[in-house]
Length: 339
Image 1 (cartoon, rainbow, N blue to C red):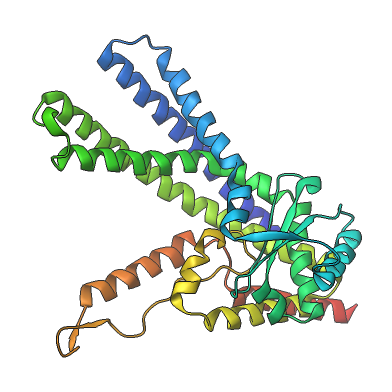
Image 2 (cartoon, rainbow, N blue to C red):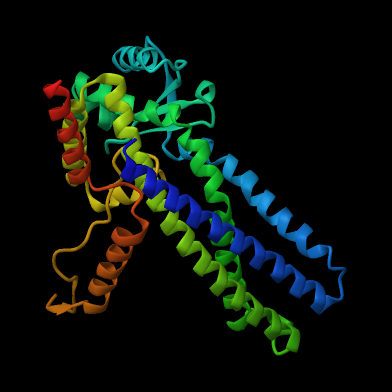
């Protein structure tokens, strides 16, 4: 890994550590406030915070299996998927890794990703769309990219650093829902009682604080993820010695993704952070037209979509742009040819 990637990864790691510690401290302070309000012993503060963090951490450990289920992937072997099995076995041997379990999804969108926290427990998932889009050399390069993630322990690493942010996101969702429910009148017979408004106010505060930590954490994790993707590209080149095929594969995947309807790409968002090329948010070229004659632009919707796309592209994008990756791989190809 070159120095610039190491610096970026180190900076993201330090900032994530600061955000995580700050959020843990805020969580302890929140439980301390509850303990003081209800007259509970102060030991509730660290214990409550630990239970929340460990509970959501345990949920994060099931993420890999959940992603495979959401992709509707089924396990295959040398008889049911001979081409894929042959390529994976060859790359695994070259990377000095145990043979991963192989699963195939019926998705037409080109996807490939790995799950599992250890090299021995890894599962490689490849979509039929990916198998159709790539030739053997390109498929080999993509498999090498995914097995580089396995070699680098990226799934375990990303899961570990994501736990505090996952807790913040869940607390934001739960607190927002609680505050909205209590202030919308669905509190039933207890509406109007002082305690209800206190809880609603506290929920709103928790939602705001947790939402802030969640956004900052997700932004830093996305930055960290982009570096890991570049590292996996370099790892794939080290395994195969063929940067040109990976560059060609990335360009082919991006082209294929552009051919799919927006709905198909949205359905792939559950695995977007895992797959070799993430489906980008699609920005409308023209505003949506409303009205009986279809001549009234939905300006608010149009600019709202533009704003969401800007936030995603600037802060939450988990993968570098394909053009950036291809440029780096072309440079690597020139270095290989000059040797």
